[in-house]
Length: 151
Image 1: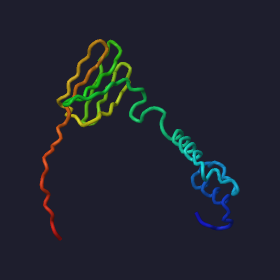
Image 2: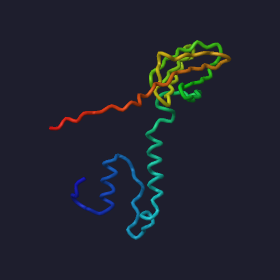
Image 3: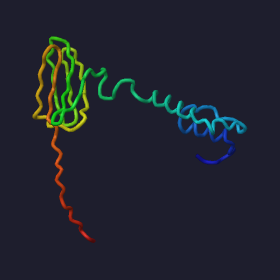
Image 4: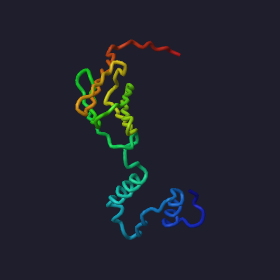
């Protein structure tokens, strides 16, 4: 923003609006100091802008997840309700599981709370509940010496 022309607060406010491409809340009068002490209007404005820019539903799925995810010492278990009869396609990665119910073509991506070993995963389906049991990745706690190269 350049300081060409008028440098009044109102003109600078208009320049900021032009730069952002949006209308900002009205600039308070110089005699009114309440906006300087009560900044709740800033929070309200930011919340409104976030609501406009963020998707209503999750970024990974267009459908609300019906998954229940919990951990034991060695496993991550995902329980998911599916309508009967169901023939889902289940895919596991180290960080997430995707469940696709082929007749309805609904795909759910479930982010896991920790990394798992996908190839050791097992799934079972009973009474409309799909349960996926995945072994947690072991974290190597061994400390190794790192040699320093002096330059």
